Structures are given as C-alpha cells and as structure tokens.
Length: 360
Ligand code: ATP
Image 1 (cartoon, rainbow, N blue to C red):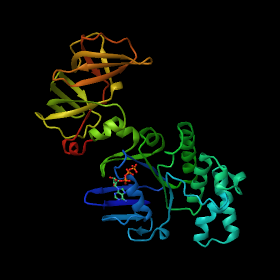
Image 2 (image 1 turned 90 degrees about the vertical axis):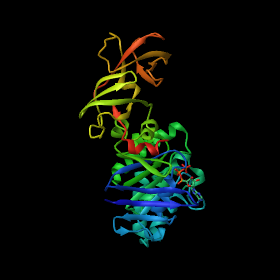
Image 3 (image 1 turned 45 degrees about the vertical axis):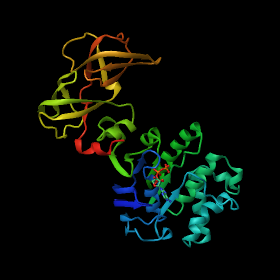
Image 4 (image 1 turned 180 degrees about the horizontal axis):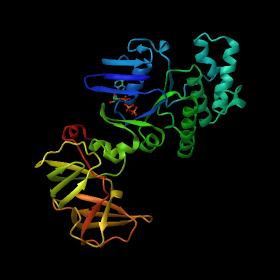
C-alpha cells in the first residue's frame, strides 16, 4: 500500500462533502476517482495534499499517518486543472522549484531537471517562459514539476479538462506512458467516464460524497455493484423480477415478462427465493430472438426502433411498462411485434438491495 484513505469525512458546512470514504492505492497503480461534479473528488485530493484538514478519518502515505502534516512535509506531487506555473520563471526553473524546496544541490538539480524535461519531451523548451508554450506543453511542464521531487504519490485533479478533445486524448496517452515509465503511484481525478476507463487500473466511482463502487474498469462495467455505477459507466437497462429458483451462478426469474434461467455476472450476490430483485444488463448484451421461440427469458412488445447507422436501438416494453433497449446490427423487428429477448450468458447483474439507497 502506498496511499490509504481511511474513513475520510469532510464537512464544509452542515452537509458532508465527503462521507466515510475508504480506498487504497498499491505501489505503481494508476487509480481514477470518477464521479459527477460536486461528488467530493477535489476535497479528497485536497485532504491528501494537505490543503484541507478532514473532519474525520485518516490519510496514510508510505511512511505513515500524514493527516495532520502540512503540505510541504508530504511526499505528494499535484497537478490541478488550472495552470499553477510561475509565469516569471523559465520552464527549467519551474521544474527545479520543488527540488530547491528539498535543498537538492544545484548540480544534481540541473541533471534531474534535464531528466524530467526529456521524459515529457520538452528538453528544447528549457529556457522558454510558460506564456511562450502551447496549452499541452504547459501541462507537460506541470507534470515534470510534480514528478521531479519523486513523490510517493502523484495527484492529477482534472488535468485535461481545460483542453480541447483532440489534445486531451493525446495527452491522456502521454500520461499513461509517463506513469508506466516512472512507475509512480497515481491518483487521477476526472468526471469523464471514457478518460477514467482508458487510463486506470482501477476506478473509485463516487456519488454524492460516497463511494459507489471500486474495481477494475471492466469489472465495474460488466458487473456494476449499484444502479449509479451502472448508469455512470455506460448505457444501462434495469428491470425487476422475482427469484423463483437459485443455483449460483444461475437464477430462475419470473414476473414482468421475465421467465426462465439466467446466468449472473455477480454470482456471489445473495438473493433469496421469493425476493423481488433489480436486474441490470447492457443494451449490447441483449438480442432480439428472431426465431421468436418461447425459450427467451424476456418477452415484450417493440415500442420504438432508432436507426443509428452503425446499429439499431430497439426499445422493448416489458409487461409492467419497464423498457429495455437492445443494441443490434442485424435488421430490427417492427414496432408492435411481440418479441423474445435473449441475454448473453453471464452478463446479467443483480443489485444488492442495500446499495440502492445511494443510487443517483
Ligand atoms: P467538481 O468536479 O465540480 O470540482 P468535485 O467532485 O471535485 O466537483 P468537490 O469540489 O470536492 O467536488 O465538492 C464537494 C462538495 O463540497 C460540493 O457540494 C461543493 O459545493 C462543496 N465545496 C467544495 N469546496 C467548498 C468550500 N471551500 N466551501 C464550501 N463548500 C465547498
């Protein structure tokens, strides 16, 4: 463990902005905190960097509990959304700044600055001033400045949000490369689901001050623990049904146009026979059964077909009015048809009831 957030709570006013948040970063990991605006991401970063003194809980860095240490005594590098480069200093002087604060001698400082400017591919700009650089180059100088003191943890708080889309995607790859080459443990904060999934080894998905889910991008996408995670990571279908037989990972469901056995993505879930559960499946894991056999676990009436060029979105209404979207490339059925829907095996998730209170 390089960084541990332990039961962190922070209140600015009466409502907690961050409420009992815990997670850990292993050495060399790149973890993204992902969540909508105002869910508490920046507050967590500020508590790790030492700019916010949390109401409760602890921040542990490699050497122990740093919760009450001032920022300069923590081995943490930070890049914020807005530029914090010193405009009157050259690129080289900016990168050397953190090293001077650590009393690194001048010769060594020079060679470290050389190394980090080479890492971010800005050796030729060493004597330029920030105003002479492009937006993307300035971001790379900030990365070099944050990395030069070799922090235990690198915190990147929405570092790409102010850039246009093309540059954002290019710099995203740069950050991935630099993180791989340095092996620095990194916490990346973003509200952009694609950015988080493309970069991170693991995601901490947040909603309204709480952790809504932690795991690898693929696991959270395929088997979301909460309705909020399901909808925040991509298009999501939910429907309710009653459990009539249970033999993990298979479950027999009935009611609301649902009848039959399904294989779960989260076979550990504890759903009792007779319980009404909320099920989740991605549109691409559903298929209209063109043979219209009675074997399909879901049945409903086609309500709407959208032709999106590369695929069709077929909206099917189940018995009690719940609608499911099927994404398919094959020719769609007609509006009004009663169709069966097949599920890709192992792609259905059942939400644990206790999580639903945090749903967004
Ligand atoms: P954003 O992406 O918009 O910055 P965020 O997920 O980083 O959002 P925070 O900035 O941590 O969220 O804010 C969490 C909550 O705390 C929000 O409701 C915000 O309005 C509130 N908040 C943040 N900073 C302060 C402050 N200095 N004083 C009072 N309330 C604050």
